[in-house]
Length: 432
Image 1 (spheres, helix red, strand yellow):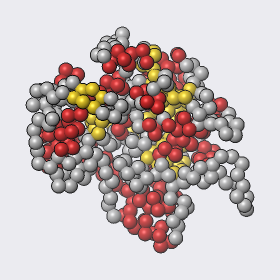
Image 2 (cartoon, one colour; image 1 turned 90 degrees about the vertical axis):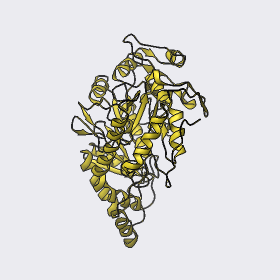
Image 3 (cartoon, one colour; image 1 turned 30 degrees about the vertical axis):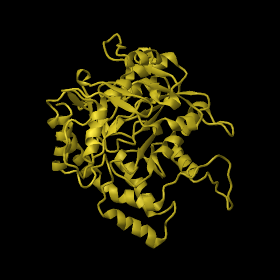
Image 4 (cartoon, one colour; image 1 turned 60 degrees about the vertical axis):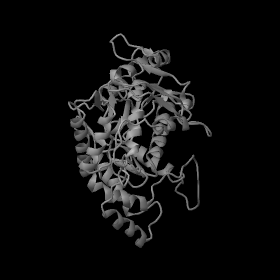
């Protein structure tokens, strides 16, 4: 039930859709006119130069997707930690890997591609990213772990210095997933430069796009050369097709690179537009029982990719989620993510639930999950039933709590202030 009806938008307001500027078609046309339509060409070279320069690393390799970069990053990390695997085995075969819990599954799946066992690390309050306290606890439980895969959620950097200090103290390797955070900085340094092997994404909904694609980023020349080789089916330098190791068809197309090349000059413009959207929401909801997704302004400047909110616990109406269905009971003065998302959809706008934590996903339900006090599997059911506080008074299984009470608001940078005002009215009406 929607508490109040509002006029629909004629054209849908998207969560975050591509914003094109015109330069993109020039570089696509250049690829067409010069007949460089495959996985080599000037656009590819320029995208790699621009990405490495922007993020502040020595090397970039343009790939078909951010997921491809994460996969090859996990393979490199596994080989560095455990040595070259036997043919037919992944580089992480049988080894546990610490992973961000509240993220899209593309952060985690590459660990499994290489035979690893994801161990999920709970979320902290200040940025909604991996909790350094929980990571330290995880190393106490699994001291043998040598690879950590860490994402920056919704364009907001995590506590990367604290995380990296712990990772280095345990002689482990950081694989940084900056797919959502291109252009965001932590203590003045760009995300995508903190790990041994790093990833940015140009997927269709990202801050800049190629319709697809991503980049592998590193300061290691050997790693960059290995990824470049693997991404083109691991061909050897022979006059025939010679293959001595497993390869992949992961290279970015020169046509897709043309789109990315045309987008790069507009990155800061897109970030400024997204920031204005976030700040407009924050001001408009200041008197509601909600909070915007948190930002550690002391240490970081996000790219504001998505604006999110979380409803105060006392302002939640009853909501129950199954694996694919959800039910809620409307209450005066209260709301829940499902009610707000339904109301937004009723005016032809797109919102989305917060990422469902990986430890709650059916595919990973048996994998270890670590909170700041230890085994998170022991507290998840208690939280769902309304409890599970740690010794510091904070909710354990923080990711499940954020998922239960949070949602992503329409954050498209082509949305006008007038359109955003109507979305704001709709959200406010849910609390009447």
